[in-house]
Amino acid sequence: MNAFIKNRVEPVFRHIGGTYEIVPNEIVRFLSDKLKDDLTLAPRKAQTKTMNGADLSPQEIRNFLGGLPIDQNLVAKLIWPSYQSGISLPFYLFVENYDELWYPASDDLWITDQNMNWVLEVDHEENFTFFQF
Image 1 (cartoon, rainbow, N blue to C red):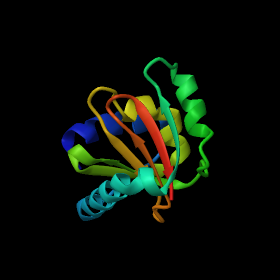
Image 2: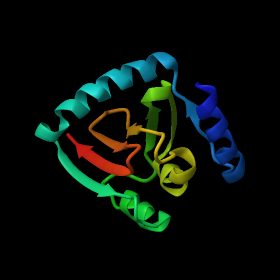
Image 3: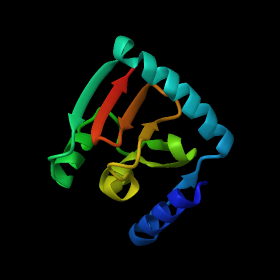
């Protein structure tokens, strides 16, 4: 795992007492390639929900994330493609701590599950886009 991401993730989980798993590098590479392809085709083949969070409160963003058709207890994979790093954790932990795990203006983050039926893309311009395939 990239040291920058590790230094961001570990304090969050020390504070909340939750757990996460590091996604192995070969899986991160596979998911990054697959998600890049899926996201290129997504606007033509997926149902989407989009929100720009730039002017929203953290609670409004949490409400949007919590309202997505994702089981909150589902173990999701968070992939930081530019850092080639990823973790797995229950989706509700991401919702509760998104603002500690993703930094606007510097991060792009892709979130999916093991079946990859959906992707939540959170980009550096504070766009939250949910694709359901």
